Image (cartoon, rainbow over all chains, first blue to last red; front, side, top):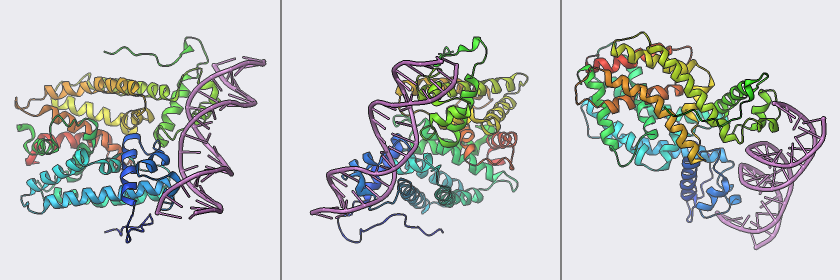
Length: 198
Length: 198
DNA sequence: GTCTATAGCAAGATAGAC
DNA sequence: GTCTATCTTGCTATAGAC
């Protein structure tokens, strides 16, 4: 478990902390406009402050993106972990995790979507940090796939990558009026289980 | 078939046309830096001209992105269509198409990667145009999945979306020193065919 | 902690010469 | 067709008052 490094100043142990609004606003703007096109002025405005004031919390725009990622990964991890608590059957566990993952991604607000779409391209160190965080999360699926009762030589790695890819791509076609995240998870698992006999 | 609208001025019927270099340069910069962060000056420089000169070919940066998309989709479509020419078995056809798609995406240069990663967020009309083009391409996979010998009530739409998502996501984990695009396509198709019995 | 004010810069796009 | 020169705008980030 990687220690949660603090890239921001959090005065919150006292009252009146605007850090949450700031992160919410940043997540929203990063999602809708993309990291590069979102402006610090707009982010500050939606959080109820002026652009200059944000630099009390964050030293740079990139640090703000890192903080949004960390919060996003924390939320997805929590959601998926909870979903696994009272399920034992390996296939059901996989499906429950996928359902929670899709729920966080598709109906869970801005953070998760930023995690999937907006990896920083500039600072290599920040990028590596976030990839490490994401890998740590995805290790949950590593374990879930390992638990499946498949042949010993089954290509489990490709199965994991296929499922994660299929899930993370859903934001490109998902419509709230169509199938729910739960429906999608069920369909994906069924497709894998039944094979040619579907 | 949507008519290929001309968003750029192409004086090429004569000689000395720098449009190809311009598109190559734009595709390269869009891929490595992202659309928003790429600068017209840098794009022009790699194409051997000054920033102002590009506006002879394109009226705006967004038009340049549209042109790169069109070329990218044309290339992937050609690659996949060729791969299907002399294959008849439905599963083999699917695998051949996936192999060609992955090849274009992972080893095929900058254009295809831009198509997958850089949908314009600003101009809604341009965005719709490009999504329509992509949908038209993906219809190839619609047909391929329809041809598969599956149960009549199989969730073919989810199968198509799962495969396209899994493929397009590979750019996030593919490494040239690992499995080839062809290997990945084979693994994905096997996973679908064999189901629980893998 | 938040403000105002602004430094400092890079971007997209245009005008007109050649 | 390509150039130089430049307009205009918007950005991140900083400084210092309160």
